[in-house]
Image 1 (cartoon, rainbow, N blue to C red):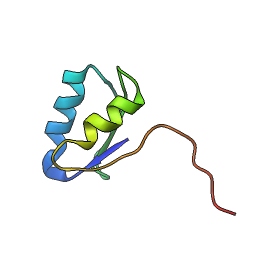
Image 2: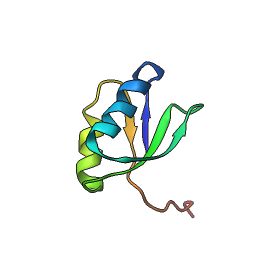
Image 3: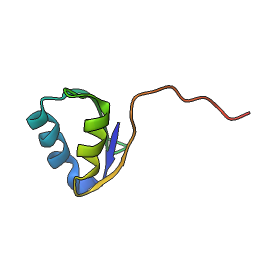
Length: 67
């Protein structure tokens, strides 16, 4: 998942398309998108993290509550 400032929305979505990533979902209320990276998670996290206006990039995975 990629979270970004509202002003960066179109730039981030355009970037995903240029990379060839599959846009899985757009979280309009959270200013984020879920993508399936064409070249793997490690490269995608690094690439999206360099974009202006991107606040956080979270790789796919499971989250569990702390005990």
